[in-house]
Image (cartoon, rainbow, N blue to C red; front, side, top):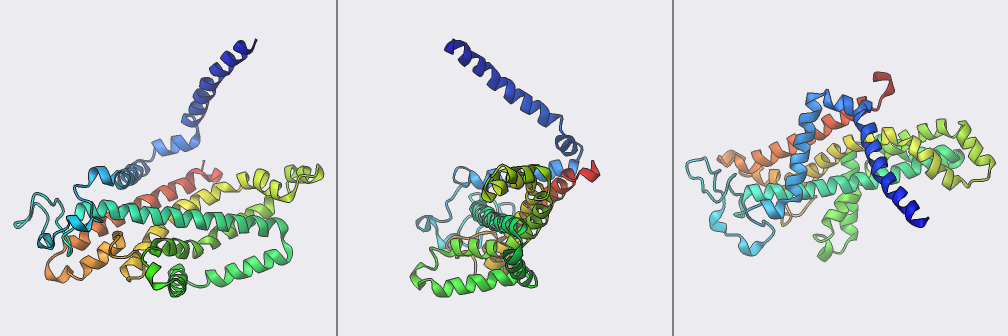
Length: 320
């Protein structure tokens, strides 16, 4: 009898997976994706940059973080197709003799790490505060929303600069470089939680008055479980859209802070750091040091923004 139950369960699992795939391929979202050439191109470019960044140790001909493999005699070499180009360096080298192609791949990893981590931190913080504010209301709602209103009156880049500066003064000087990425993630994340909180709060205020929430209250389910199990899944649609667009904003913010010299240290260059380094040599004719990282950053941000715009339209029932 037990063997029969196990065999039935084994058959049901593949069928469930196949049914899920069929529902996905028959969904409006997949139809919208397949009929949007711009979205397909944007997703392919984003996927290409993501895969290249993750596979940097296997793709890059040089490890730019290995100072022992660098040679200052190889600095400022132009791209391979230029007159003084070197076949070892496809896109040329920068001022430390690092292969620019390899540095862009590794720099993209840092930019994506900071972007994803800061967005995740802002999302968790903002969604949590939005749920609490919208569900409980009263004085807690007033305090959280007043803080959000004060913060939203300032540009996010200024908030990130302020938080980054304060944290760097509190950290021992010997640990600043080691904790630079952590500080950067926290600074960008704390500057972006407001959008999530305001959106989730407004959706929670609508959802908490619906019958399924009232029924959960009647049977004695605790508020924290009502928020997490019942309300949260129904307010995540707009949050996903905000998160996608915020990823592009976080990457640009990291690049801006690194360009200003308060972001990632020079020993671990991100795309913003590469652009700042190249900017010092731009007018001396060594354009490749800043142009190629800038193109990579622009393509990544534009592609993610286009995906966010498509996701916003695809999840909007009024546009279906």
